[in-house]
Length: 122
Length: 107
Image 1 (cartoon, each protein chain N blue to C red):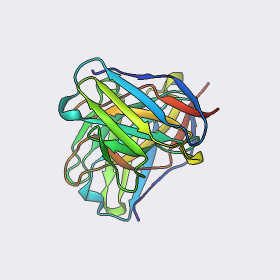
Image 2 (cartoon, each protein chain N blue to C red):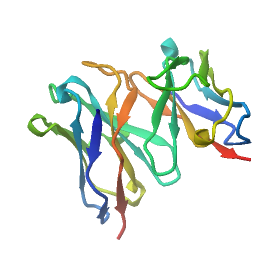
Image 3 (tube, each protein chain N blue to C red):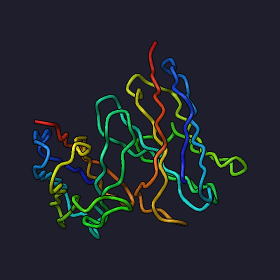
């Protein structure tokens, strides 16, 4: 069965960076785009960007350009999202999610990781 | 960016009742690229509906979606206890965005 398993909760100071991992299993990792979506406490969902695990091509939401980096390691079927220059309003649960369609992107998410809480506090 | 406005913010209903949730877009959503997700506390969202009206795999037929252009609706025909949750609409495609959510709570 398809599973996305994320790394554990993090506490960071303002200005620091955080790197969250997302390990995929149950399907061909290179066959589906991985997206990152975040959710601030009590708030809605916000798309951050996507990565093609077959080529490494990324596309970031304008809001996060210059602060986010999405990478991947095919050998261990894992995607990563690194966010730098953290601020208190970056406190959120960060999710990885798989695109619905193989080989392309539709920005529809059929499988999600369990989420990783990142807390930014001095 | 397309802004999605969901209403009402909270819907208080009893099991067995019908729920009607609205999602309005600030501009027309192309190709009816409108989806609905369900989210329960401390869980990731779950895809319910895409293409405005197509149910995702494994979604019961009490969930239905309709609409086009700027006005979309999610209907739950008869609420089951497990349906009480927050529901988000999403427009997808090149620059996705989500609505603010509607909480369906037990009356």
